[in-house]
Length: 282
Image 1 (tube, rainbow, N blue to C red):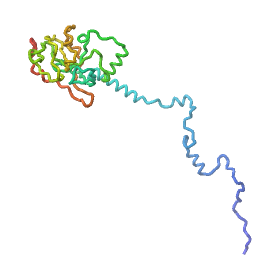
Image 2: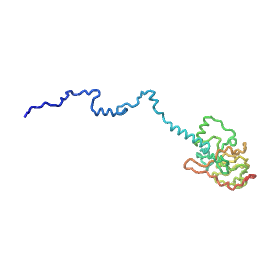
Image 3: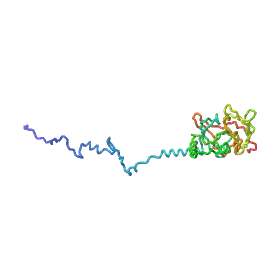
Image 4: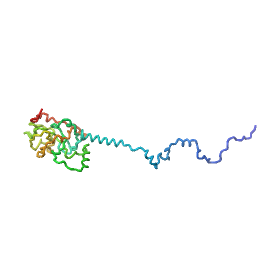
């Protein structure tokens, strides 16, 4: 038996401690990883888009979304149209309508109430433009201020124009309104009116008067008679303190703010039995 060692058929090991792998060699796992890696990946990778991009790359970027801006503009336009033609918030600036309306209340004025042939009735709380009746000359003002005030008034954030008022209708065209009977009550067409809405402690009027309301006009008074500047205070002015129908902006139908005072403003029944004015038809 031959015990001599047989020559090895295995290749000799490279004696070099660090083999030169070259530019394209290396482990298969490393090559696989490099093939699978995508631009922008890895902890040290540069972002896909260079900071020094040219005008063509910048032009390809999407423009900012304009949806929210257009939505806000559409909402503002809708609120403006609603306020101009249907319902407008009106901020109560004074105590002339207490206790029915408090300072700071926002009432919703129904602009369609008299738009289709209807007219204000006794007992309605109306908002009207007092120019020519309560105010003879509209106050001059800065145009920019007027625009800003109008925008704020449209959503009830600020009081409306200085010439706008809110009062209660006591007499309509043809009515004779007098003050007062032996019990201190106002009479309309000869019948005394018990007014439950008058501020506690107030009398119906401290000022005596006897007027016949012209056709197409209204006689109006505040509920807080002691603090209301109304038709009584303008008896000597052109129009005798009455308000033309075409100056009526709308009827106050609801208290919309504050939340704790949400309610509808119903027409009181105090005027239900008032007879028609002398010479009235129907």
